[in-house]
Length: 238
Image 1 (cartoon, rainbow, N blue to C red):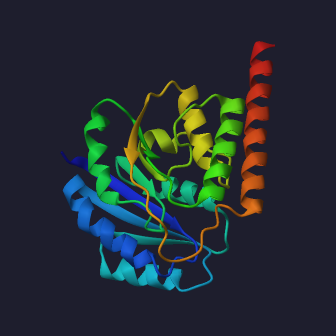
Image 2 (image 1 turned 30 degrees about the horizontal axis):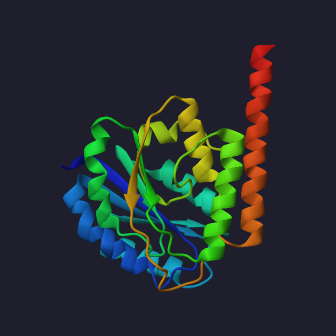
């Protein structure tokens, strides 16, 4: 099965050792999955050679576009940039750290006939006990506020209907963005198909998702969205 068209993108911050490998991996598999495709490299203000390599790749591969943030705006801002710049019918996003096997996207394709939202969940997290523990706490917090109850809120392996996702008007710029997206999709009554994906240890680069500032910002953004949602409910009820 092939999609009519597909945008695939990945955010990257100081991923000079991974960005070319990611593009090569996507270039290898995407022709099997879509009749037309593009690959967006979202360079989130990297201070290493990530941006330069991305520009070189865009010259080498016609399907590749490099999009640069002038400064580091955060993971969620990179997701929003990817969503806003997607030009094809379906959008797939993953991380730029080579911790997922993008060929597993093939298992998602049959479900596009019945679902606009197909999301992965990691069968086994490969990024250490501390980060896995923090992720469980964050999931409990998000479920308490929004009752999402998906298996893996922030798994960076999602296939989405582009028109739908571009209509959401997301507010977050940090690590809460993926959860906010799922919350707003749930409010619209969208059904979500959840599928298992493999997760591998990072070989190169340094993760930023466990940074206390990142975690705190995600928690604050989640509460702001929750507060505004409750305020809107009260206003509509009044």
